[in-house]
Length: 270
Image (cartoon, rainbow, N blue to C red; front, side):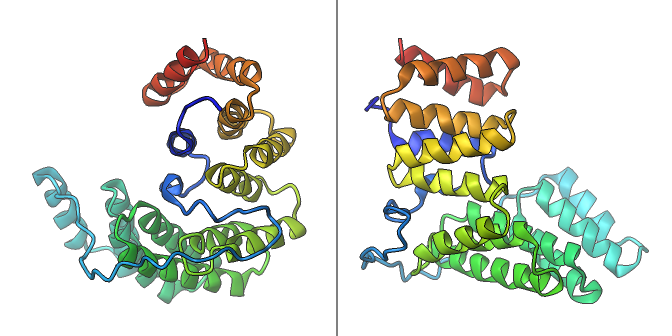
């Protein structure tokens, strides 16, 4: 073992956007036991708080922009869309989802329900409150289900729906649903990446290596798969391979936050 915390590893991958889910580093470690489908024992700890999720404060400039959108003479459906985009830009995804859902309920097509599901999924991923997190998960599933009723082969909806079960009382359902996605399309990279990320979180780095290598065989330039592979290789003891991957990524250029973390990792591998 490298001594680097697994939670930190997956955080790196999340920063790079390995999944739409931003909070994977805090998921239960029993989610992927051995990919056999066996249900592990459930934790008895469960919050009973009903505290609402805190919202970010809008700046004066943002307040003015919001007022302009609300007072617009546009069609109400267009205003809903503008509001959803506005709140997404402010990282207030529950508000984005609220307006996207109002629009989707009127238009009722695959794209609008998919967008609604994505906003609720972002709210779910960012939530620190288990109660509201589950509320957002349920709403995301509902929106994705409406998209799937229109297009049963919508794999993005299937994959994200699966990931909402990771923090539920039935986490193994996530694995089963991801397998179903891969049965439909064995080369669907987001589902492969999801399996890899869950394997990392459960400490099964050999399985994670296999998943990320599988993703790279399909999409060799996938930055997130390379990151996931590198940090998984560190934990399997293949530090030279990991170092080579990270050095290669540094050469192509990363954002400042991620580059700083990669630099720290490379320093620790010397």
